[in-house]
Length: 266
Image (cartoon, rainbow, N blue to C red; front, side, top):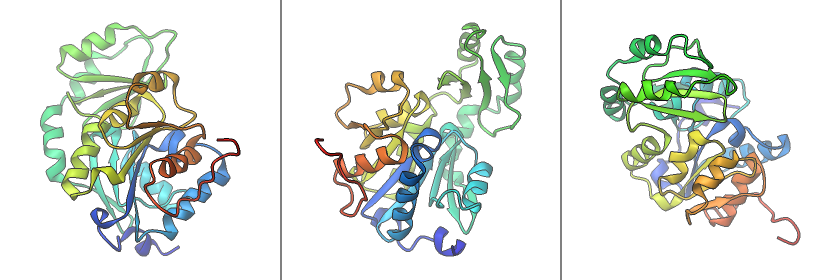
């Protein structure tokens, strides 16, 4: 594939028929390989009318490596690091948008060292080695985790987030995937009704709650589904991962050419 062609938008996202703003692990990367390939190929074939944003806990380095390897199509924008990074993607480079990250940095208050010190030795938490810019992240062992860690984070004026019963993130107050994707959509002048957000775990909760058309894919964490069950703008897919995304695009009638066929009897 031609890298420049893949990463240089033909039209702005505001001019596209539809934009997918999707979590990666378990969602865009979830489901059967054939379904993932069908979705990825469809996006590449329809770049004139389909936009792509990754909204993920992953960092820009991971995203760039995955896309450069050919495992993923390149997005036009990234909301990464659980919402603490908002970046543009062009010609293989993921570049943070300073104007959109200024408030995030202000809310973080350069608290990384303080967080690591306060949570050092906390039962059930293992510090992840990457030094993220505006968050601190841990692997979580639920059988030994001490709830006191939550209180310590709140006392610092920060937010904590547990997802998939495996990860514990410390974030700036009020910053997560939902507020950050809304900030990017507004910045780009996109029509909100033409943006689909997609997720599968509790770190996607704020994104599914933010008011944009949304899908909880079929393999979603049960607690996520229960937390958004009352929301009329959320589609609860039966299909897993990539197939669940295509199911939702069809259900919301967001693009006339989505490669999804309803199962017999549905």
